[in-house]
Image 1 (cartoon, rainbow, N blue to C red):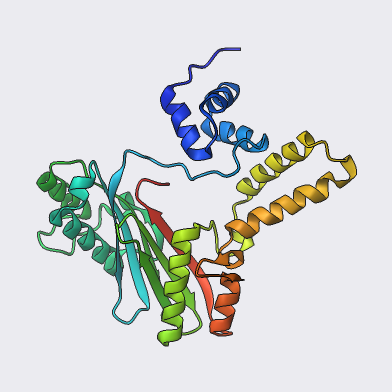
Image 2 (cartoon, helix red, strand yellow):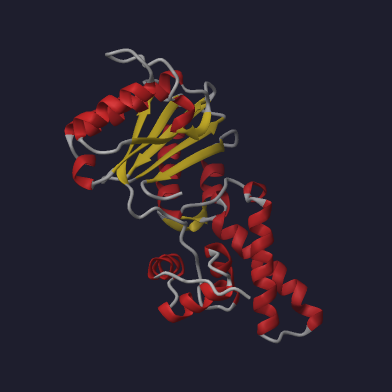
Length: 289
């Protein structure tokens, strides 16, 4: 078997993602042949890592910006990256980011996409050209490499689009609700967006959790139960219980509401109105996938 050289950078990244010790991280990476995801799975299966932070790109800086339509039925969010936090806080960079968010609101298709998908669009702001040319011109002013990383655009004529933007501009949420408008729906959308920013769910409902992720969690649970020496006849029930717990913890409507953990987000939505429901959301964090 060919040995794999494990770098200190990889060990540090695995430790950041799992909270495990340096030696445990190094051993896991060696056993996994340098595969970061497999190493995470090994540590979690052994109970060394209790949770996993999303993979991130720690060197990335930038800002999240959000634009809402005046009537609250549409919204856009964009992540713009640069090299340093200093540039991200400058007026020129902030203005450029807001201009891109306005462009997304006016011109992007509904959904979530990469910035590259809009590069060829005609730039509707001052100067003309394309979106890509606008970003390049803005980068020339700041003196740093600048990337229009991703965007989200939601519209709901029979509902509302709400948002939450953290004070430092590093975390933003866009959430779409259907079945109602007015202040009740608007307040609910703001509360749900704030919750998403804090709790970081993977989907709105259990069926939104990706099948491959559930398969991985099942493997981890099966390995944990085997190591614990549980009787064979009850292992499957324990595994299923662990999976249900995982889904509840990572599904928006089943999570305890951050402002009142005596009720779930789903119960909060139901109390606001029988017709109201969460359609989808986008959560962007600078430097995080």
